[in-house]
Image: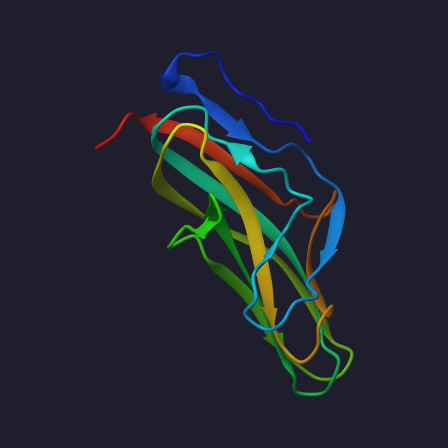
Length: 152
């Protein structure tokens, strides 16, 4: 994990996760968000409005003909979902066909100093562990935040 933080002057500050390599199979129940622990939690250094963005490289594999598999990702702040950060990828297809995508969101959000931002995801589909979040040279997963303003 690499986390970068600019000098204390607030105008140009940013934090982000570094290049990561991992695979996290989503093994929970449908609609049960799991913490993607391989992506380090970002600590917001000081209060204000931050532009926050993430990418989540999804892996989908269908176990049966005509099945539907969706993977949703979202950012959480101190264990609570950040409304509007949700994204989804999915497929419905014949047996053996797979699909991958990298998707995320960019939004403005007000944070307090030392807030903890983490990536979560869940699957909706026929069986656990047929979808996951990964990161590597062919698709990156990460979280980025850039300080915008001390407040509106």
